[in-house]
Image (cartoon, rainbow over all chains, first blue to last red):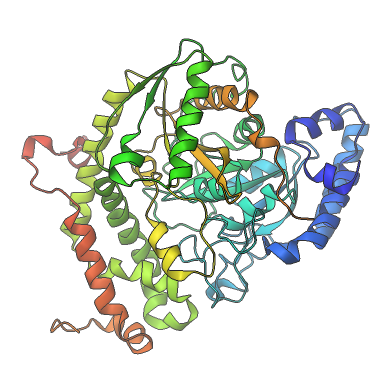
Length: 466
Length: 55
């Protein structure tokens, strides 16, 4: 197989080939490292590539598999980590001058879990600074680019993870999501990104943005790959006080179950009334819902609170908590932040304590409303982004589209939400939808997402790079 | 610039970008305006009042 074909092997495909010894972890890792070297200078998706450690891990995996000790479906599969995920003895910068020399002594739980599953870390990916400020051109490293058109934004904040997975520079990657930062790059780059239920994946060792809203999530090219990655990283963890002590479901057991007879709520209000979407996105969503209806789902329109109110509640909590984390550095070294980061965090200095409490109260009311709604549906379908990715150097357009999205509600609600590709705009940029469900019902989201993926071709497309 | 005295923690950021404080104050006000407020005591989220055994 060519490096390109190896680069675009899904996790599930590679896993079978590794299990049957048709493919070696060393060959797969070498191919990906060569591909990163050839393609990534155009995309800047990686901040750090740890080739020596990756090859050592690949050789260890090869020996173990040859010796009959295969640890599971991720054994021998390479991955990338967003560079706010702490990695022992490997630089973890948060894409910031402030932490440019930071080398943690301990792995984040999610990094340790992937290592324990036999995965091979290729490197650390670009992010918006501290998972918030970007895209920015005034940082020590450039922002990642969109592989579908490198002049366009790859989404953020998990920009590098989205770009690398879409470009076949890693079969899977970790992102983090506080206001949509897994699902935005997944949407912009045409891949699958899951923000699991709050507390489902430990945040221990990951640099926080907002402890009430932070989530960790898998980013992959297919729905099944996403389920396999979440399986490896989900679970209770004493190192994260918000970690949920809820048994982890088998995410692939019913993934081929289809949608016949399932009840799906279609939240078209978000993209038709609250924030009217770009016509290509609106048409893509209608077509996607028609596919699910055609597969036998019972799709009904449903309404919820206005997006603007949900977004304001999310932002008051997020920015208050982020400011509490960053205020000492903002006081002493503001010049070391990107302008975009300062602009987004500094409003936190001007909220009253009562504003923050009001937002928490509002969050609880929305949650009660959401749980009532979810009693009637297996999943909800809604927009992710309202627009295809804009040009990365068009600052006014980046600002205009930044809030034109329907992801923040599900950080606020702690509900699982997955973005997946549903086609392309007339300009060839990815379109996406979200599949959302009640807490800890990720398996149902994967089942619906997989039913859509199985009868469409969107996840098989390759961007025009390398 | 507002007449409100600038907290010392913001002085360095203000010196770096004289528009930042006013922009941030306005953005905070816009977001707070999006909160509904006006809650009744019986609607308070239970988690705020969860008391331990000692209370």
